[in-house]
Amino acid sequence: AQTVTQSQPEMSVQEAETVTLSCTYDTSESDYYLFWYKQPPSRQMILVIRQEAYKQQNATENRFSVNFQKAAKSFSLKISDSQLGDAAMYFCAYNPSGTYKYIFGTGTRLKVLA
Amino acid sequence: EAEVAQSPRYKITEKSQAVAFWCDPISGHATLYWYRQILGQGPELLVQFQDESVVDDSQLPKDRFSAERLKGVDSTLKIQPAELGDSAMYLCASSQLAGVLGGELFFGEGSRLTVL
Image 1 (cartoon, chains in turn cyan, brown):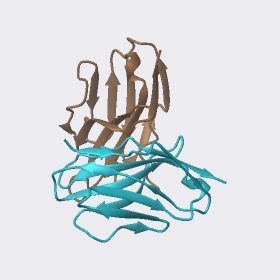
Image 2 (cartoon, rainbow over the protein chains, first blue to last red; image 1 turned 135 degrees about the horizontal axis):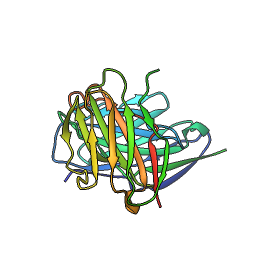
Image 3 (tube, one colour; image 1 turned 45 degrees about the vertical axis):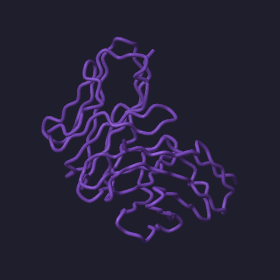
Protein backbone atom coordinates (compact mmCIF):
# COMPACT_ATOMS: atom_id res chain seq x y z
CA ALA A 1 0.00 0.00 0.00
CA GLN A 2 1.11 3.53 -0.69
CA THR A 3 1.63 5.42 2.54
CA VAL A 4 3.08 8.73 3.67
CA THR A 5 4.63 9.03 7.12
CA GLN A 6 5.44 12.20 9.02
CA SER A 7 7.11 11.14 12.24
CA GLN A 8 7.26 14.57 13.87
CA PRO A 9 3.85 15.57 15.25
CA GLU A 10 5.22 18.92 16.39
CA MET A 11 8.34 21.00 15.82
CA SER A 12 9.51 24.34 17.17
CA VAL A 13 11.96 26.80 15.68
CA GLN A 14 13.27 30.15 16.76
CA GLU A 15 12.47 33.06 14.46
CA ALA A 16 15.18 33.50 11.78
CA GLU A 17 16.50 29.98 12.36
CA THR A 18 16.27 26.94 10.08
CA VAL A 19 14.07 23.91 10.60
CA THR A 20 13.66 20.65 8.72
CA LEU A 21 10.44 18.66 8.59
CA SER A 22 10.66 14.96 7.73
CA CYS A 23 8.54 12.84 5.42
CA THR A 24 8.94 9.29 4.20
CA TYR A 25 6.71 7.43 1.79
CA ASP A 26 6.24 3.91 0.58
CA THR A 27 5.57 3.12 -3.05
CA SER A 28 6.54 0.70 -5.77
CA GLU A 29 5.99 3.32 -8.45
CA SER A 30 8.92 4.96 -10.19
CA ASP A 31 7.12 8.05 -11.42
CA TYR A 32 5.24 10.27 -9.03
CA TYR A 33 5.00 13.74 -7.52
CA LEU A 34 5.58 14.88 -3.97
CA PHE A 35 4.22 17.98 -2.32
CA TRP A 36 4.41 19.97 0.87
CA TYR A 37 1.23 21.80 1.81
CA LYS A 38 0.84 24.41 4.56
CA GLN A 39 -2.37 24.76 6.57
CA PRO A 40 -2.37 27.93 8.71
CA PRO A 41 -4.85 28.09 11.60
CA SER A 42 -8.38 28.63 10.27
CA ARG A 43 -7.07 29.18 6.74
CA GLN A 44 -7.08 27.07 3.64
CA MET A 45 -4.32 24.68 2.79
CA ILE A 46 -1.86 26.02 0.23
CA LEU A 47 0.94 24.50 -1.78
CA VAL A 48 4.43 25.21 -0.51
CA ILE A 49 6.58 23.22 -2.89
CA ARG A 50 6.37 20.42 -5.44
CA GLN A 51 8.89 17.81 -6.55
CA GLU A 52 8.78 15.58 -9.61
CA ALA A 53 10.34 12.18 -8.88
CA TYR A 54 12.14 11.95 -12.19
CA LYS A 55 14.00 15.17 -11.50
CA GLN A 56 17.11 14.68 -9.42
CA GLN A 57 17.44 18.37 -8.64
CA ASN A 58 15.82 19.37 -5.38
CA ALA A 59 13.02 21.90 -5.69
CA THR A 60 13.36 25.32 -4.08
CA GLU A 61 10.91 28.16 -3.53
CA ASN A 62 12.49 31.17 -1.87
CA ARG A 63 13.08 30.17 1.78
CA PHE A 64 11.68 26.68 1.24
CA SER A 65 13.68 23.80 -0.17
CA VAL A 66 13.44 20.04 -0.16
CA ASN A 67 15.89 17.19 0.22
CA PHE A 68 14.56 14.48 -2.04
CA GLN A 69 16.19 11.09 -1.62
CA LYS A 70 14.40 8.78 -4.05
CA ALA A 71 16.19 5.58 -3.09
CA ALA A 72 15.50 6.19 0.58
CA LYS A 73 11.93 7.36 -0.19
CA SER A 74 12.53 10.46 1.85
CA PHE A 75 11.26 13.97 1.17
CA SER A 76 12.14 16.53 3.82
CA LEU A 77 11.27 20.23 3.84
CA LYS A 78 13.76 22.83 4.97
CA ILE A 79 12.55 26.26 5.99
CA SER A 80 15.28 28.87 6.23
CA ASP A 81 15.05 32.20 8.05
CA SER A 82 11.82 31.10 9.75
CA GLN A 83 9.15 33.74 10.15
CA LEU A 84 6.18 33.98 12.49
CA GLY A 85 3.91 33.51 9.49
CA ASP A 86 5.41 30.08 8.88
CA ALA A 87 3.58 28.73 11.92
CA ALA A 88 1.11 26.16 10.60
CA MET A 89 0.42 22.49 10.03
CA TYR A 90 2.58 21.10 7.24
CA PHE A 91 1.44 18.09 5.25
CA CYS A 92 3.50 15.94 2.96
CA ALA A 93 1.57 14.47 0.04
CA TYR A 94 2.23 11.86 -2.64
CA ASN A 95 0.64 11.59 -6.08
CA PRO A 96 1.39 8.68 -8.41
CA SER A 97 1.89 10.03 -11.90
CA GLY A 98 -1.12 9.67 -14.16
CA THR A 99 -3.57 9.18 -11.32
CA TYR A 100 -5.97 11.40 -9.46
CA LYS A 101 -4.94 10.05 -6.09
CA TYR A 102 -3.23 12.24 -3.50
CA ILE A 103 -2.16 10.62 -0.25
CA PHE A 104 -1.42 12.87 2.71
CA GLY A 105 0.66 12.32 5.80
CA THR A 106 -0.63 13.07 9.29
CA GLY A 107 1.05 16.44 9.43
CA THR A 108 3.63 18.29 11.51
CA ARG A 109 2.65 21.29 13.57
CA LEU A 110 5.33 23.96 13.31
CA LYS A 111 5.63 26.57 16.03
CA VAL A 112 7.78 29.64 15.45
CA LEU A 113 9.10 31.27 18.59
CA ALA A 114 9.75 35.00 18.68
CA GLU B 1 -7.51 35.76 -6.95
CA ALA B 2 -9.81 32.79 -7.63
CA GLU B 3 -10.58 30.60 -4.65
CA VAL B 4 -12.50 27.46 -3.81
CA ALA B 5 -15.66 28.46 -1.95
CA GLN B 6 -17.20 26.28 0.74
CA SER B 7 -20.22 26.68 2.95
CA PRO B 8 -21.12 26.57 5.71
CA ARG B 9 -17.84 27.22 7.54
CA TYR B 10 -19.24 25.73 10.73
CA LYS B 11 -22.10 23.34 11.34
CA ILE B 12 -23.35 21.93 14.62
CA THR B 13 -25.95 19.22 14.42
CA GLU B 14 -27.41 16.47 16.51
CA LYS B 15 -26.80 12.86 15.64
CA SER B 16 -29.31 11.31 13.27
CA GLN B 17 -29.90 14.67 11.58
CA ALA B 18 -29.07 15.41 7.96
CA VAL B 19 -26.32 17.82 6.98
CA ALA B 20 -25.11 19.15 3.65
CA PHE B 21 -21.96 20.91 2.52
CA TRP B 22 -21.48 22.90 -0.65
CA CYS B 23 -18.36 23.55 -2.70
CA ASP B 24 -17.74 25.79 -5.69
CA PRO B 25 -14.34 25.08 -7.26
CA ILE B 26 -12.17 27.48 -9.17
CA SER B 27 -13.68 28.18 -12.56
CA GLY B 28 -12.40 25.78 -15.19
CA HIS B 29 -11.16 23.16 -12.75
CA ALA B 30 -12.50 19.84 -13.94
CA THR B 31 -11.35 17.77 -10.98
CA LEU B 32 -13.02 18.16 -7.58
CA TYR B 33 -12.23 16.35 -4.34
CA TRP B 34 -13.96 16.02 -1.00
CA TYR B 35 -11.64 15.18 1.87
CA ARG B 36 -12.37 14.52 5.54
CA GLN B 37 -9.83 15.74 8.05
CA ILE B 38 -10.14 14.56 11.63
CA LEU B 39 -8.43 16.82 14.15
CA GLY B 40 -4.72 16.10 14.28
CA GLN B 41 -4.73 13.96 11.15
CA GLY B 42 -4.16 14.44 7.45
CA PRO B 43 -6.93 14.74 4.86
CA GLU B 44 -8.48 11.48 3.70
CA LEU B 45 -10.23 11.27 0.37
CA LEU B 46 -13.98 10.69 0.44
CA VAL B 47 -14.85 11.20 -3.21
CA GLN B 48 -13.35 12.55 -6.38
CA PHE B 49 -15.10 13.92 -9.47
CA GLN B 50 -13.84 14.47 -12.97
CA ASP B 51 -16.37 16.89 -14.42
CA GLU B 52 -19.71 15.38 -13.33
CA SER B 53 -18.46 11.79 -13.08
CA VAL B 54 -17.30 10.06 -9.94
CA VAL B 55 -13.73 8.81 -10.36
CA ASP B 56 -13.17 7.41 -6.88
CA ASP B 57 -15.67 6.97 -4.07
CA SER B 58 -14.16 3.84 -2.59
CA GLN B 59 -13.73 5.47 0.84
CA LEU B 60 -17.13 7.11 0.94
CA PRO B 61 -19.47 5.48 3.51
CA LYS B 62 -22.27 5.10 1.05
CA ASP B 63 -24.85 4.03 3.59
CA ARG B 64 -24.92 7.57 4.96
CA PHE B 65 -22.84 9.79 2.67
CA SER B 66 -23.70 10.96 -0.81
CA ALA B 67 -22.06 13.42 -3.18
CA GLU B 68 -23.05 14.94 -6.43
CA ARG B 69 -21.72 17.35 -9.01
CA LEU B 70 -24.62 17.53 -11.40
CA LYS B 71 -23.40 20.08 -13.93
CA GLY B 72 -19.72 19.46 -13.44
CA VAL B 73 -19.26 22.71 -11.57
CA ASP B 74 -20.29 22.99 -7.91
CA SER B 75 -20.76 20.01 -5.66
CA THR B 76 -22.75 18.96 -2.60
CA LEU B 77 -21.74 16.44 0.05
CA LYS B 78 -24.56 15.11 2.21
CA ILE B 79 -24.57 13.06 5.40
CA GLN B 80 -27.74 11.39 6.58
CA PRO B 81 -27.98 10.43 9.35
CA ALA B 82 -25.02 12.12 11.00
CA GLU B 83 -23.13 10.13 13.64
CA LEU B 84 -20.83 11.30 16.42
CA GLY B 85 -17.81 9.97 14.54
CA ASP B 86 -18.55 12.26 11.61
CA SER B 87 -17.29 15.26 13.54
CA ALA B 88 -14.43 16.56 11.40
CA MET B 89 -13.37 19.20 8.92
CA TYR B 90 -14.68 18.57 5.41
CA LEU B 91 -12.36 19.98 2.81
CA CYS B 92 -13.09 20.60 -0.84
CA ALA B 93 -10.26 20.88 -3.33
CA SER B 94 -10.05 21.38 -7.06
CA SER B 95 -7.40 20.98 -9.69
CA GLN B 96 -7.02 21.69 -13.34
CA LEU B 97 -4.27 19.21 -14.11
CA ALA B 98 -4.66 16.52 -11.47
CA GLY B 99 -3.67 13.06 -12.56
CA VAL B 100 -1.81 14.29 -15.62
CA LEU B 101 1.02 16.51 -14.53
CA GLY B 102 0.94 16.24 -10.76
CA GLY B 103 -1.23 19.28 -10.57
CA GLU B 104 -1.56 21.51 -7.56
CA LEU B 105 -4.64 21.07 -5.42
CA PHE B 106 -6.46 24.26 -4.45
CA PHE B 107 -8.34 23.94 -1.18
CA GLY B 108 -11.28 25.75 0.29
CA GLU B 109 -11.32 26.87 3.92
CA GLY B 110 -13.32 23.81 4.88
CA SER B 111 -16.57 23.10 6.69
CA ARG B 112 -16.17 22.11 10.32
CA LEU B 113 -18.85 19.70 11.47
CA THR B 114 -19.64 19.00 15.10
CA VAL B 115 -22.14 16.23 15.82
CA LEU B 116 -23.67 16.26 19.32
